[in-house]
Image (tube, rainbow, N blue to C red; front, side, top):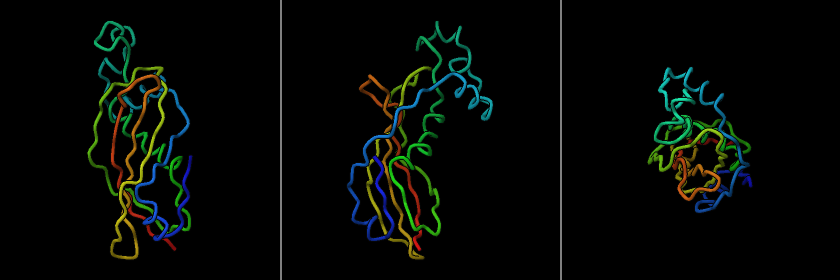
Amino acid sequence: MTITLDSLDGVMAAVGTQLGHTEWMRMEQDRIQRFADATDDQQWIHVDPLRAADGPFGACIAHGYLTLSLASRFLPELARFERLKMGINYGCEAVRFPAPVKVGSRLRGRGELLSAELIKGDGVQVTIRITVEIEGQEKPACVVNTISRLYFE
């Protein structure tokens, strides 16, 4: 589901809206390795399938920050902001990693528009909670409140 918002008033009225779910995506070892290469985090629980098979999780797991970075992928699938002059990623708060993401797991994002407040310069600061769900598991992989600043035409 994607909600489309195109004005300050529309955003303000949507506070409290459940944004639904994104499509499922699979966490593959190749994506984990590319993230390890980009961040220089080559810890064996992420990049050594043989050693990780005997480790605490029974397989390689995705980096927590890789899982967090999926918020950038999931946000536009959950909310579309039209008639924008500019949108800025302002930050994140309350980041948690309740469960590890094993290689091969399927993930999706679930969203909720938590708050919106008018800011100087005819903009709105929007907080959207993204919950990264793991198929077949009760605990999510990541929960994060994303903060964006939006300036409409």
